[in-house]
Image (cartoon, rainbow, N blue to C red; front, side, top):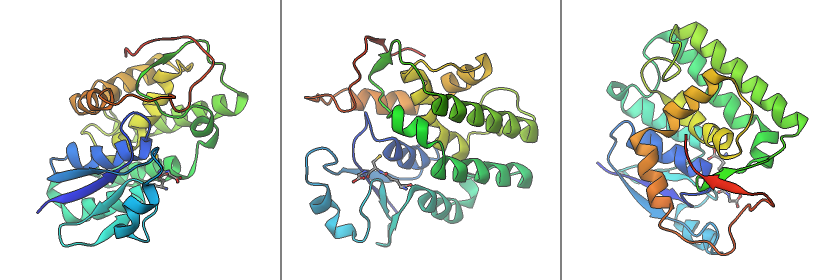
Length: 226
Ligand SMILES: N[C@@H](CCC(=O)N[C@@H](CS)C(=O)NCC(=O)O)C(=O)O
């Protein structure tokens, strides 16, 4: 019973990271197939999975293809109730679903201005008012999640859940662009990004060289550290 996850890239594809974490962190057996997100072969590589057209895409062991990361999350949670992808507590579970849905449909300024990259920390990035507004909203949601769960630090709902999966690339943007957030948010970002699975993904990402580097900024940078 092995899932096949089709991903685009480890250094830059935030959705690919989400798809992988929801398998890896909950010990669901999986293989990974790389799709040519930047090499021009993406449509051809994904043709056998049509009508899936973005990464990640998931093939279930029996062959069904699932596109869209939130649909993959719900499918895996339904198929593996004992793995507790969603929080056990009903109020926490509803809130976790809200956070994941809002992440999927929101924060367009942060996503547009600060593409995920796990390579280094940009120095001197000046966030626009719209990015600052997204950061404010994200921190409001984190505070709400913690008020529902009662967990002041660590994963939002106590045990690691899909909410943490969905916000790991958000944390990577906050750290990778040195964005202004509260100490509590920075500590949560460190929890997410210092996870051994994320380090493993980041180490694999660093095996690839890029020329030119996608999403380059005209800024200095320093080594990644959280
Ligand atoms: N709504 C999709 C978004 C997936 C997505 O945008 N993936 C990007 C890579 S991070 C992609 O495939 N981009 C290629 C393209 O837009 O052609 C999901 O939740 O999975």
